[in-house]
Amino acid sequence: MKRTFVFLLVLFSLLTTSVYAQGKVEGNTLRVKGGLFLGSLRTDLEKRNFYNDIVRTEYNQEWQNNQGISLINDWGFDYFQSINAGILSNLFVGLHLNRFGRGYEWNSFYPTGLGIKEADYRFLYSDINFGVTLSPTSNFRILPKYVLRSMSQTMEGSYLGLGAPAYLGQDTKNTTGTSGLLGVGFEFDLNDRATLFADFLLFGPFLLNSTGSYSSEQFRVSNAGASFNYANGGYTFNSEKLSFGASIVVVPKLRLFLSFEREYMNAKAQSPIALSFDGNQFSTLGTLMEFVSATAEHRIEVSGLKFGATYDLNL
Image (cartoon, rainbow, N blue to C red; front, side):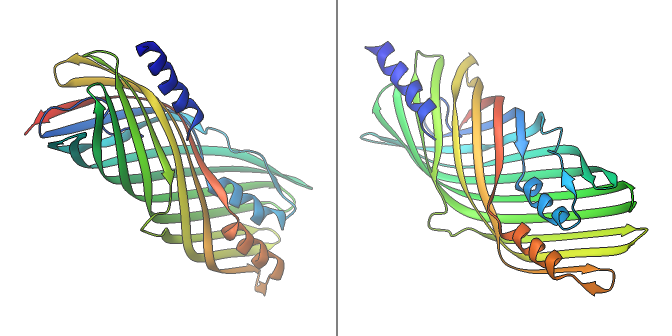
C-alpha cells in the first residue's frame, strides 16, 4: 500500500504543472537553502528580436548557448512557525532568489550579406512566499502558498553585418515585472531520512495583478545610413511551474536535494510607445513591427536539474 501511494504521488507530479520545505521541520525553524541549476533558458526577447529584422529582409537563426550552469539559484530561507492545531502544523514565510546568465550567439542572413550577432543576457527573479503546512498523516504534508514574484531581464546585444550594406549595431532591452501567484507543494517521507516532493505554481496573477515595464532601443550604422528603433511601455507576465524530486538527510539538520524544474512565464508589453527612423525619415513599417515585437505574447522557458542543500536552525 505504501509503495502504491508513493507511485501515485510521483505520477501526479509528472502529469501536473518549486518546493520550499522539502522535509519535515521540528518546532520553530529557520531553513536556509541554496542550489545549483543546470539546464536550458530561452527568453521571450529572442522571439521579439526577430520582428525588427523582418523589415530589413534579414532572417535570424536560433540563439545558441541557451544551455548552461547558473550558480545563484534558489538561494534564500523559509521560517516555519509551529502551530500544531490539528492538521495545521506550521505557518511559513520565505524569500528565494534566482539568477540566470547567458552569453548568446547567433547568425543572420540577408540577401547580400551575413550578420554576426551576440548578446549578454541576465534574468533574475525573487519569490516571497507565504503559506501553511497541512499534515493529514505523520509522513505526508500539503503546503498551499501565495507567492509574490518580482522578475527582471536585461539584454545588451552587438551586431556586425558583413555584406551590402555592411553595418554595426547595438541593441538594449530591459523588462521588469511583479505578480501574485498561487501554488501548492506535496511531501512524502519514505523514512526518517528520505523525502519525495513535488511543487507547483498553479495560477497567476492572483490578488496582485501583473505589472511591470518594457523598454527597447536599437541603433544601427551602415554604409547606407543609420536607423533607430525605440519602444517603451508596460509589461505583464504569468507563470506556470513544476518541480519534483527527492531530498535526503546527510547529517542532522543538513539535507541534500535533487529536483527537475520546468517553468514557463508568458509575457508581453502593454500599450507601448513605438518609433522607428530610417535615417531622418520616420518608418511606418518599422514602427508597426516594433509595436508588434513588444505586444506579441512569448514565453520565457526554463527547464533543467537543480542540486542543492538545506540547513535547519532551530529557534
